[in-house]
Length: 195
Image (cartoon, rainbow, N blue to C red; front, side):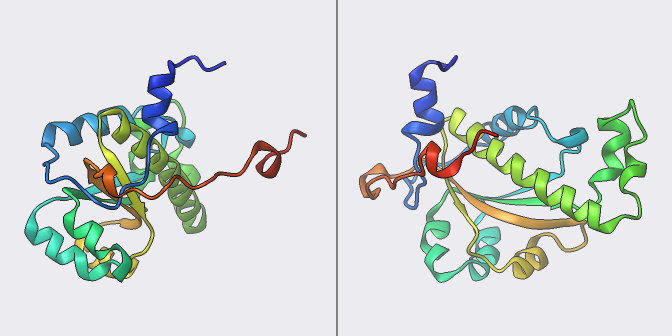
């Protein structure tokens, strides 16, 4: 039996939907800060926390982003109040003396580019799931997307950093009037085994 009340589970999972159309309502700085403050406390391996975020909100930034997204994602991105570029930091291990001070965790990664890449991608992907749940918890709707030119996004927004884009996520207040019927999900029997 779930510990959280049903209305909370509805907000986070059961009634939450992926949105492609948006109400013309802005997302405030305070809401973005609150989203991050919730998301940052969720676990990652060795507390490595590699997720980095660029919130694209200004018209100038949106104009740079739109040529980078696939045709099918252009209109929903053009009209979204915010698009988050959810990236991972390939130098995340430099923060481990602060984030994981009880061991020399930085030395586990230094010079091991394969381990760095695998850990950064895996843990930032996990953090993206937390990000979506936190966004829903602060009242935002989400439209995560993988249809974009990663190299173009990285060149336009992440040049000169150790950050590499993983996924994009539109944020705002969705227009539920244009939602399609909810799609099915796999059953426990189809997706799980107990060994």
